[in-house]
Length: 202
Image (cartoon, rainbow, N blue to C red; front, top):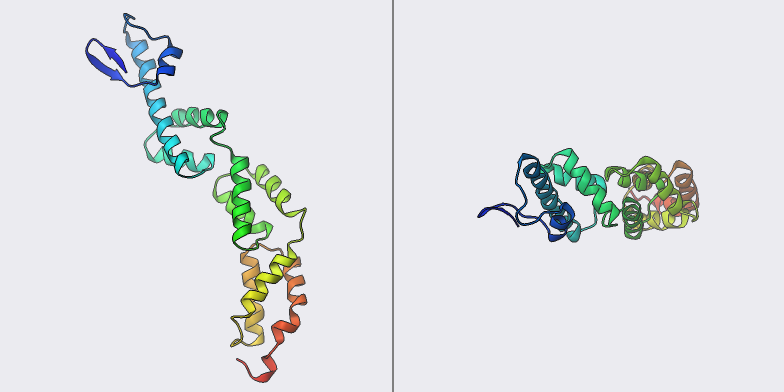
């Protein structure tokens, strides 16, 4: 705590007190009051940011939005975000990789959906392209897309052929697969898609 006489004027971490060179008997003037005030706001914002990061990982963009909602001005937010990045509590690259991994583990996903997920988190476009390329270029996404479509087919026996095709295409498109992959999947499953249609299923 920083006291002027008996009045507590700010609460600062001990390290901040040391960094600022504050000491007993120091002359309290307007300039020092302003510096201490800024430091107190920074410390409070930093603690609130850390509390949110302890609950769940966040992108820089998302955390900035949270701090803005709490009423902190842009210079304070930038200082806090830069400090957390320096300390590696905030890392958009690691966060993006984790988000891609979680998305692909839940259900097979193509590059377009991955880009969309990362974009929604405010991650830099060049970083998005690099992370998505790393995650998708080295593997064949078609087997996962085939399995996803095959699962969906098991619930579609009551539908006619065109409805089956339309719904399968829509599912794969929503999961971010490109038209070439979707066409390949539809061709591979053509017999299964058509199965039963000629027997009068609707």
